[in-house]
Length: 86
Image 1 (cartoon, rainbow, N blue to C red):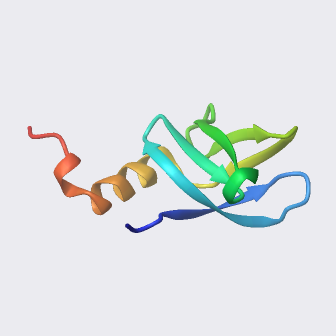
Image 2 (image 1 turned 45 degrees about the vertical axis):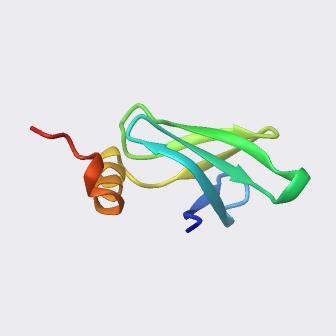
C-alpha cells in the first residue's frame, strides 16, 4: 500500500511539513498529522479564490498551496479510472 504524502505550510511559522493524505477530492482534502495514537485529522477546504486549501489544527492554520485545477489533475493522474466516462 502506497502512502500518499503532501507538503503543507504552517502560516504562523512558515515551516513546511509532510502530512499523510486520507482522502483527496476537488472540494476538500483530509490529512493526518502525526503517527500512532498521537495522530490528528484535519480537513482542508478550498479557499475563496480556489488557489489553495486551508484548515486549522490545534489553533494553527495550515495551507496546501495548490489550486483546485492542479488537485483535479493530480487525482486524474493518480487514478485515471476515476475520470468521468463522458
